[in-house]
Structure formats: C-alpha cells, structure tokens
Length: 150
Image 1 (cartoon, rainbow, N blue to C red):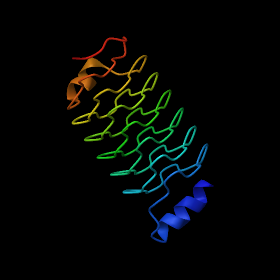
Image 2: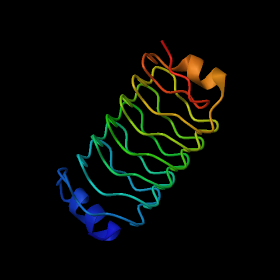
Image 3: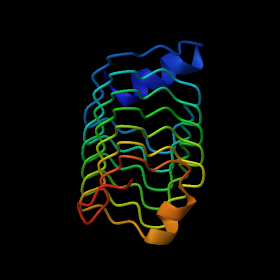
Image 4: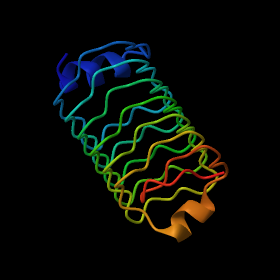
C-alpha cells in the first residue's frame, strides 16, 4: 500500500491497517494517532516526525525505518522489529517495547521515560545509560553491550 493511500483512508475514519505492506512508504509527518498497524510491514519506511501516539505496532516490521522525532508516546511496539531503525529524538514516553528488537537502533536523544523495555534486545544500539535509567522496566533486556539486565 502506498503511504498516500493510507493517509487518505485514515482521514476517512479507517484505523485498522493490520498486516498492511507499507515497506518503504513515505509517511513523513503523517498524523496517524491510535492507528492499528499490528503486524504491518514498515521496513525502510520514512516516518520522520510522524504522530503515532497510542498506535498499535505489535510485531510490526520496522527494520531500518526512519522514526526520527516521531511521537510514539504510549504506543504498543511489543515484539516489533526495530533493528537498525533511526529513533533519534523520538518520544517513546510510556511506550511498550517489551520483547522488541532494537539491535543497532539509533536511540540518541530519544525520550524513554516510563518505557517498558522488558526482554528488549538493545545490542549495539546507540543509547546512553541516562536514557535507560528513564525506562520503567528493563528486566530481561539485553543491553547495548550484550549483557542481560536483571
């Protein structure tokens, strides 16, 4: 599905795009709060500055996606694949990233306050200890250096 088509359908009130193929889609600065993208393929998509507040992105494929400065506050990204994604400056405040693959993701300056990172894979991710200290839950997370958090 093309990014423009998704935005048009969203504006008509459609919210369920579960399993949609949006790989490489241009959704820059799109306003898609509370959208359902459960299991969607968004690998390589450009979501820079997008508003995805409260979005359902459970088990979505966001490998290599651009989410710089995106609003993902309260979003559910449980089990999502965000490996090599750019989340620089993104707001992940209160987001559920449990079991998510964030390996080699760029989380520089991302807001992780209250984020749930239980069992998340952060190996090789660009993230500071200060940012991780803001996260609500880290039990079982694999940290950037490969160690497991208790």
